[in-house]
Length: 432
Image (tube, rainbow, N blue to C red; front, top):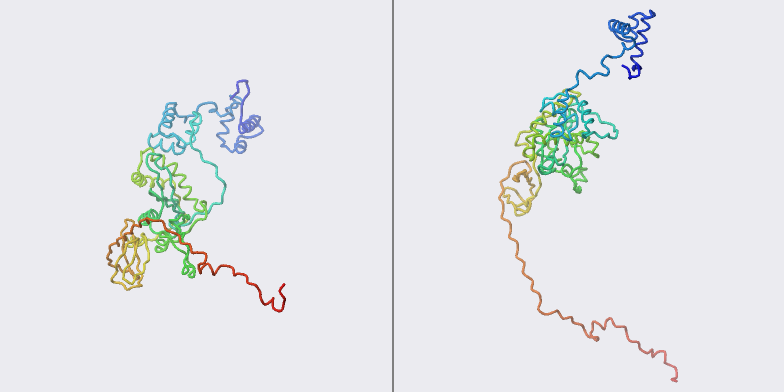
C-alpha cells in the first residue's frame, strides 16, 4: 500500500518478513530456515517468496489493507440499527443494546461494532465509571454457605408508577439472584422475601445484612441481657435464630459489595427491560421478575468452587408460620388477663404470673401460646369506655388577694426586734 507519493507503507512485522524473503532470494537462507524465523509454515513462506519475486516489495503487504472488510454490515442494516436505537433503545449501553437487538430484531452485531456506530453518529450512551481499587473478598466455596440481602429504593418504573423497593438475595458463591418488589423496606417485607427464598431454595447457613432497623434492633439492653452477655434482637434476627441461620451485619456498604453492585446492574438492565414491556405496577413487576430472573441467572451466575449445596430443607408451612411472625412476651395479671396493643384478653386456663407468647401474623391475626408451646383459647374483652371529663367553668368573679395587716402575728415574727436602752450600764453613774 502506498501513500500517494510512491512511498510504501509497511508495519514492523512486514519489514521483518521482507528482510527474510530477500535473504532467501539472495541464496543466503533456505525457505525452511526463513519459515522457522518468521514462525510460519514452509508453504506460506513459499507463497511470500513467490509474491515478492513477481510483485516486488509490495508482495509482503497484506492484500486486504485499505479494502472494506468481508464481514462489514450493509449500510441498510446500520441505518436500521441506528434508527431502532434512537427510537426504542435510547440510553442503553452497547452491551445491553446488542442483546436486545438480537432478541427482538434478530440483528446480530458485536458490542464493539455498535459502540463504533454510536460514536460515529454522536449518540450518547451510559458508560461505566472507573471505581477506586479495593481488595476483593474471595467468594464462599459452597452454594448456600452465605447469602447477601439488601433493599434498594428507586424509581424502578421511571415515573410510570410509584417509587418502591426491590429487595434481593444473592448467593455469595454463585451470584444467583432472588428478588421481589415491595412498597417499603421493613420487617414484614424482609420476612416474606426470606420465606419465599426458603421455600424455593432451602435454608442457607448465614445471611449478610446491613444495620437497617428491620435487621438489627436499636433497643438498649436490659439488666438481665447485660448479665447474660446478650443484646436485644429484632424480629427478623429472632426468626433467623429459630432457623439456626447466622446473621452477619456489615460495617460498610463495601462489606456486602456483591449485592450493592447487583442493584447498580439491575437499575440499568431491569429498568430498561421493564420499560420495553411497559411495566408500571408493583404486581406486574413481580410477575415480570419470575421470567426475568431465570434468564439473568443463566447468563451471569458462576460455578461454585465446591459442587456440594449447603442449603438445608425448610420447615413445613405451619412451622414457618410460627417463625415468620411478630412475637411478644406477656405475663398474666392477677385478674387472669393480658394486654396487647391496647386490647385486653382473658386467659382463664392460666394462673397469674404465667408467661404467654403472643404471635401476630402479617395479616394481623393473633395466636397465644404458653411456655410449652400449647395453643391457648382466649376471650377478647371489650375496651373500657373512656371517662367523661367534667367541663371546668370559669369563675365569675376574680379571686381576691388577702393581704394580712402590718401587726398580724405572722408578720411580727419577721419584724426586727426593737432596740431597748441598756439600764445596767447606767447604775452607779450620776445623771448629767
